[in-house]
Length: 135
Length: 292
Image 1: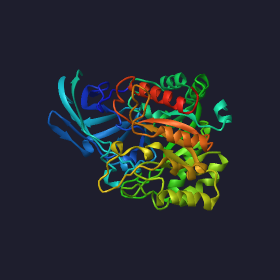
Image 2: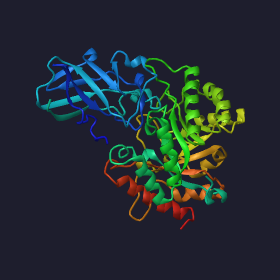
Image 3: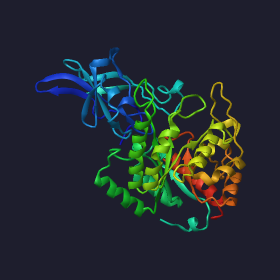
Image 4: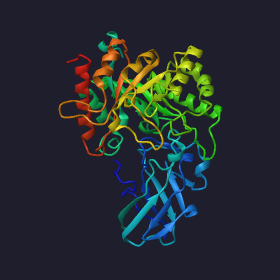
């Protein structure tokens, strides 16, 4: 089951690759009552403890496949269901230290049946959450 | 599935799962929603395809099997399949006529496979008053033979701030009359009748209520309605939508489509709140339909 906040707790951890930590991941839900095609999604921005990550520092894991942020606008063939959690993968050698982190996530998406003026910002909203990372 | 109410040429009751947008997946499963509907005797169902179908647009055989088994268990008829022609699918472009057609065909086939007969076809818009994309007639007309083959009716939703008496609605009716099609029609959202205090406030756009009698000329082309509401009182009254008049006209005109509840009020993420509001609305509708 999903949590109401856009940032989901389950899945928040560092990414371990062999003996190394290559980054961390933040699960997010789609703040929308229906799913979208990935080309309707815009690149995300993530801020952890005041440090902001953008563009190619972040990838999306959607349905078990990894997409770069530059790739999203070309993937009108891949669907993200709003009841499925996506995971933001943030590249950072060493990841985050175990403990409490202030996490902020913002991404927008397009809704063609709304006036163009509010296309990207009617449903999209930033979210922040205090999150505990264990490993 | 044919129910008694169908034979009497009267409207019958249903629910759009849109109502449960802040509970379904959070605190409720689809089966919980169906169980709610069964309690209310709401037999007609609307889903939103790219939300409620797992692995849309390619549901698994297992999902399909469960879908049909739940419909049977809770005596539910799939009525309306909500889908979108996402005209701004790719940033900076308007979706071509061919790509729009392809998107429609994919949904027509899936709607039919799931047992739906009506589609709520949401078109992309170009302005504040929700004028649809300029090529809508082209791709809808291309898709008409496919809709006929799969026996579904594509229906844009007439929603505030679009009045029922407007150039946009006239254009839809002209299209239906020109093509003579039975596979493109209308879905009237009763929010068009909402009283001024509850209506959407849109800068620079007048948004006056339509009169319930404005529906009469459109009913021959109307294949489902959204029974919109934003608040039901403890004594089963909707203070901002004139349901007495609306349902009286539907009965008088012998309209026999489905009234699909759409709750769009507050507290939707409060567990049980939406279910309670729906139950109150269905008590009201049962009374107005002469069921009780």
